[in-house]
Image (cartoon, rainbow, N blue to C red; front, top):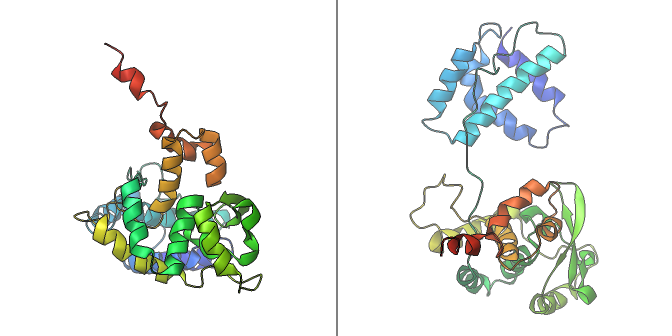
Length: 282
């Protein structure tokens, strides 16, 4: 039995369960299939998978390699679960995942925010997107799904749909953006979207600005330091922390399910302990 056979079973089984199943399928076809697709499932060893890791590290990001190993392990697990494979999963404890410290930490300073806003101010759809991202911390998909009925001008608030957490929460905006939105929505139907541009248009336009001003000299895979559209969400949370906003309030505004996701911003808080440390041995 070849791994391709087990892979077909896995992708059919997960077709309606896994959100990015087509992306996983492409990863299998492009990277795993050439190595293991035609191999006997009983003869694929942990050592071969480690060698696969080593080869892929020459071209792929560590995070991507970990995802590939996870796919191989998941394919075997389905076969074991369905009782069509009696052997052991070669992706076992001996196959160590690459330790990746690539959480995005970059946020825009106030001066950088001015530069960004100045770049987009003449394109209304882009300016509204940037302002909503900076003032609500909403994800790209959340902001692009915002409709007229979600905007509450009387309370300077917007009902946000968080597709990642499958929930809704309130975001807030200042009076300057309120006046812009007021003009924007007056001729819209109740279910019309505030921004009538697609994800790719927003990404492409903003990426040129990020690269021009904020990513000079950075490697393309420098996930920690490169400015991307998701950086606007981190900027929102970071400046809340810098201004002394309680961590549980930041959690609520970011719609984080787990407080551990929010705690990364605690080090930016004014009471982070820096002043105490600097004065410690005076």
